[in-house]
Image (tube, rainbow, N blue to C red):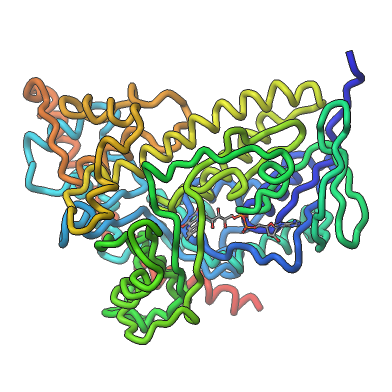
Length: 515
Ligand SMILES: Cc1cc2nc3c(=O)[nH]c(=O)nc-3n(C[C@H](O)[C@H](O)[C@H](O)COP(=O)(O)OP(=O)(O)OC[C@H]3O[C@@H](n4cnc5c(N)ncnc54)[C@H](O)[C@@H]3O)c2cc1C
């Protein structure tokens, strides 16, 4: 047996959100490790990706970051879920709040909702958070401690400011060595094919025991050096282009700075794709996602200009992005693990990319290999788990399309075709003809989208399940009690929660008093 090597040096390549979150989380949990991050000064970070999940609260807290510091520096606002417009058909809307439906542990809410209130929206009937968002209220009070919430929330943030903020924290507070240089190529260890060192433009050879590839879509180590191919999901999810734009609040119709900053990411479908709309405390991030097979760049610009009510919008005003929808066949090869865009990317609907980064980091931290031999076991588990997770993300995004009744363009006719969904999703759709999505449909305890998320989308998109029997009397009674609790809670929340703007102003003003 060859001599084993302890893992003591970690080299993260890439200084986008994935790189800094990985480096910072490793350094915070394992201060005994020597953590270095190298990023190319001439390759900018992606600079989009502005909606997070609630998990980001735990990630930041574990890195020792103060919530209000983060909110102030990253111009962040609160995100309480996603809102979908025109997805089922023009004029239709539904919501996927972060909070679970009240009482879902006790009864099958979807069944009773369909029996009792088929005309009311599912999300508003089962979850008080939707009304809170509609009323422009924050998910917590001024006195609620940092990272705690009255309701579940994540963030909207400025991606460039986030990377700058994480850099400062990781270097100054966590002692991470930061090198600005370009990785030219890789020196492998001939007998094992592990990476021995990276050759850089100006800093010579950098060696380590574990390499974390966070080089974005370039996937410099996993894709380029190890040649691990992408599992291309274009046939199910053809969107592969985006145009992104930043706008002051006042430039969007019906909004000005004093109006409430809404606390959901808005996703609005049009004939050629969909537009995202993310409000920060200082501006909006807006963009159009589309498929090059069905929509030209020019048409996408027209759609974005219509959405933003900006008649003279030109290519000079927008960032043009291209991606291949898919994930790598393996994520961890030898002593190199890819996290972030280098591991894969699917269109930003439901904002799963940073959540996948966080899940990757969590598994890396929990299973952190102590030696090279240990690494080969850990990497196999990691690859299996993340292949499953990417498949689930893909199915969940696809659900938004196959439940749509839009047929107003070639794009919608193609993307809504159930035949283009995975076998797994097609079987689930069969099951959901007669029953609601349930915990039996998902296999992991840390499932990326729970069956409750599936319910929000499925019934938000007006799906009808032909349940085989009527709800029992006892379930109907329990449901009435839950409804009553919901109404009481909602009234209390409306009375007790501040306006979103008011809370953000309070947090941002606190800095000025402090300065
Ligand atoms: C249109 C769009 C919208 C999105 N919206 C969301 C969203 O709402 N929510 C969400 O969670 N995610 C979203 N994402 C994804 C999100 O943007 C990314 O997950 C996030 O930015 C992390 O990117 P990254 O760090 O992997 O890569 P990048 O930001 O691209 O960083 C790559 C880094 O690698 C470095 N690098 C590259 N090559 C080398 C080299 N040879 N040597 C040294 N360094 C190198 C670069 O300098 C850079 O620092 C979106 C993505 C797109 C395309």
